[in-house]
Amino acid sequence: MDHMFPILTRLGPFFVYSYTAVFAIGLLLSWGITHRLARQQALPRWQDAALAALLAGWLGARLGFVLLNWGYFAERPSQLLQLWQGGLTAYGGLLGGLIGLGTWCWWRKRPFLPYATLFSPALLLLIATGWAACWFEGCAYGAETTLGPLAANLPDTFGVFAVRHQTQLLGLGANLLLLTALAYSPTRKLAHSPTCKLANSHPFPLTLILANLIHLTLTFLRSDAAPLLLGWRLDSWLALLFAIGGGMLLQYGRQKKYSG
Image 1 (cartoon, rainbow, N blue to C red):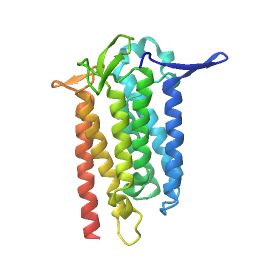
Image 2 (image 1 turned 45 degrees about the vertical axis):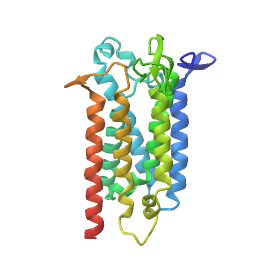
Image 3 (image 1 turned 30 degrees about the horizontal axis):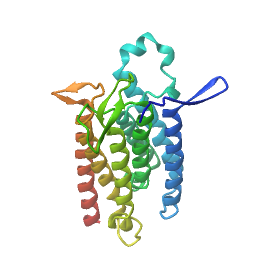
Image 4 (image 1 turned 30 degrees about the vertical axis):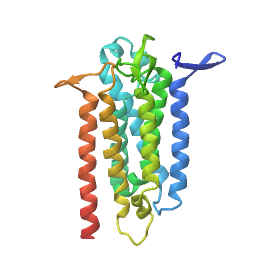
């Protein structure tokens, strides 16, 4: 990669930001995948659940970014709602989306795990899209290293080039591989089996565990600024906590399956 591409093109007086464009494509693809999977499962009003998760996820992602950069936004309040310029946090989005989906399921008296499982492929695709958007934007860049098959001459967010770990492409590729593996796993096939009670509880916890372990691994290769807690990046701790939470959900799903 020779350049960063924060702006893809210009339409009249408007700029088309790469982060916004790439993420919009990811949202459309995620909706299409979910719509196709929904034909195989009897989950009523899944569109409402998806919208609740997306809206809460977007708000959570923006709120997380604003809180982490409050000193900047306190002096520039007009930029708080300029979502088209990026400025989102992955774990704010994930937490917000889970809260939004959980709230909708509680309100509509629907089971959480089957809906979460339906949205699992979309979640992985959005995570992959986020890494792709960072590749264009230059965010989430890798630490400096020596030349190798997983390193390249890459910039940081300030445009300073160095030989760095290709964290964005590694995140993109790893999550796409995980999406493919889960799509063809026996667990995914069981999720569509009407004779396997609550078997569809399992793919979402697995998604949560594996996606967060990928993120946790990549945090040790990154060099972008992040808050630290006990020597670890904050998102490293969050990845570990969400992976543990996924393990607890997996155990809960197994107990429900065998007790049912």
